Length: 122
Image 1 (cartoon, helix red, strand yellow):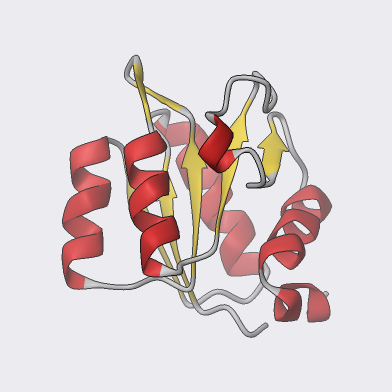
Image 2: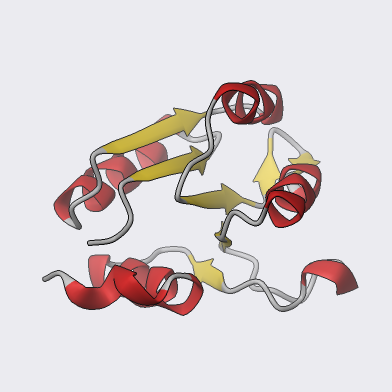
């Protein structure tokens, strides 16, 4: 897999750890879990992941500020939410949404949508 590192923004640790395991199974070397928006920004201050997966609702706050920063930095990302993509702001409507609950193949497919080399590994 061409992707090696991922930032995961997820406020439910069990979901975050499951997602981390899926990414490792897909061949990622690093999957950093941030459980708050502040932690995500702190991670981005020191590192640039190959891809990011953002839960939309983080402790009652939307992750769109992190999404905007990723977009401005050219880092591909996807949203992960149980609410679908209807609520995304206009500027982020083109971002793929991984609908919870999702499978390993769903994750592989959505990563391939934002980074063409991501689906080469089984």
